[in-house]
Length: 240
Image 1 (spheres, rainbow, N blue to C red):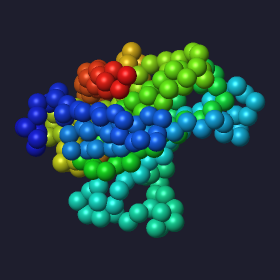
Image 2 (cartoon, one colour):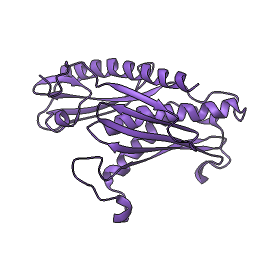
Image 3 (cartoon, rainbow, N blue to C red):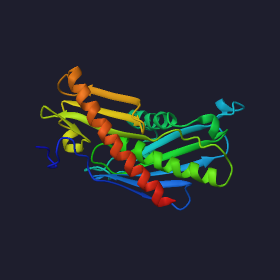
Image 4 (cartoon, rainbow, N blue to C red):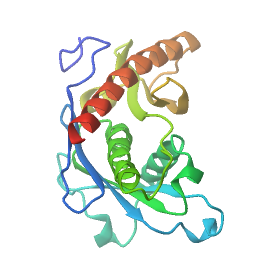
């Protein structure tokens, strides 16, 4: 039995509320169980210097966690004067995951920055950031299309992410913190709406895993991604 009482293949309750931030071109608050992440998209009408004259745009991300997002207070990274390695790794992951679903030439020479701020953490914050970040990106791009600034939709497909792992010897979907901290194997799966893989991060935390077990986790991830894509669609439709 999972600590939450969920079945092995059950996701946590998902909600995505859009229009959270007045000034951002796209924003949402995504909740995956008790994990909550505020995501916003900001459009900058110039591309990074390394893309100048290329005709291509860029999507990047920044990630942060509020001091009391966890059980004990974490010091603000700004007060420490530098980002942790974990923060840098996560925001790079979010950026490259979202770029995989974007035609950067259709975006034109502009940049969209996705900010993901964790206000409450209970496992899966990077996955929630990617899933919610896509919604914020979709809403920002919709504004560009509606204004006629771009004429071709640069978003090629949905991008969403979910965690899977082996807990108490069983493959499970969408780990919360209690499961994540005890899982023998932990993995993050990033996929498109069409089911194509963007990135897989898997590691043996306490026990090695077999190829059949990895396939079981992938099957669970595919089902979870499909549920997340439905939630993304509902959120975007409600915002229209």
